[in-house]
Length: 310
Image (cartoon, rainbow, N blue to C red; front, side, top):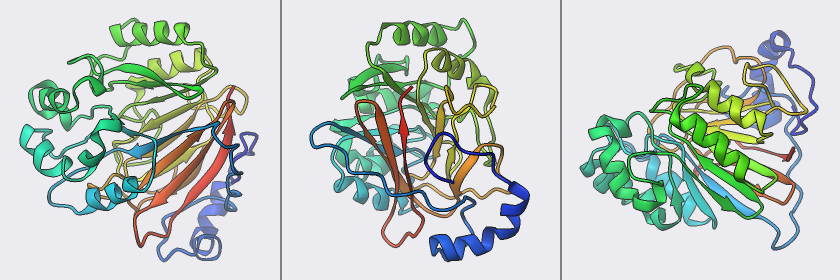
């Protein structure tokens, strides 16, 4: 599957039969962790000085796993703004877990991090340690959703642990925020994915947020929660393919906590991997973006491509 938006639907039956062969011949990987078509072409080099970088993942720091240190080492070599897609410190988001597990790893990049909270962060006093740790970088204390501009893009961090229903404070705030931005290109991230083939599955609760973003022609959504990597073709809030106005979703629960496997991918899946920790690097241009999944040292799975803003 190429990185172009105008892509045919995937023949899952045929690809399921060829998946193991594709893994070896196309990607050179040792395990069957991908199901996709031909590898997309490498992103073209952007014009100098015309882009901004947003890089990160979700499901990150557990003191019993070395994954967060491995992914933090990737951030050490990538300039730009760091995002987190929730579940920053396991397993309860406590003050001690932020101090002992997150801070020595991804905490090296705290000053340039714009986080989103996850359900594990909310296991401690409605995420009070999360808000205390990140301070103003996490937006208004206790609310968990905010926005900022990054280069030519408007970026929105949302909170999937509180009410997301149509008419809720968050949904109404989101519509007002989208109405007010002058940026053409829009990206949002939150923890629980609207669409996922993983064990947690697709979250219908976040559909009103996706609807608001779709109504205002947003371009990209990034989530975590399922501990794997997934890339979807642009789609509607209901999950119908829409190469013209659809939003592309990435699930990047690859920050280092653990790995989740799954079976048959759901509709509109373009690529996935269930065995690799890493980060998603998004290079944001004036009217387009490139994505690159970067694996930790020793990892073989990669995914890259380009997309245009609406």
